[in-house]
Image (cartoon, rainbow, N blue to C red; front, top):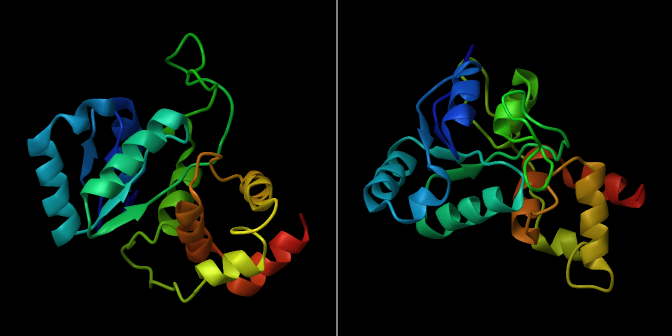
Length: 193
């Protein structure tokens, strides 16, 4: 089990149970869209984010991104974002796949969850933080990933190649790319498209 400093917020109890088998930290639930009406839970998440840091770890489907964007718009400091890849299938406990057919946090193996947390910049006990990348919006424009003809298609192709969620906004994509790749690595990946 890996101990991390930041707390984590997930959509539901099955996601929480899966994470608690992998990491040693506080894990909160949004109760799906319930967080949008629960002012006390939202205030608690704000305080945790401010004092200890909070990692948003929602599913990669549309609903997960609605919840993620709501938290991003209401919690202004101490927030990090972990993303699971788009993997199609169904969780063992379910009789059918979800609406979009993608596995959620609960369906991911521990090594994928840990990789996503590290990529989000989680502070892992015993590991030194090594983030020194500085991919900027200007880099995204220069590489044709924003502000140009066919930039949306190029972003979608890169998201697919890197196995990142297809629903990522360009700002979320920028944040994820900056955490995982150097500017030189990103340039090489874009040339390979």
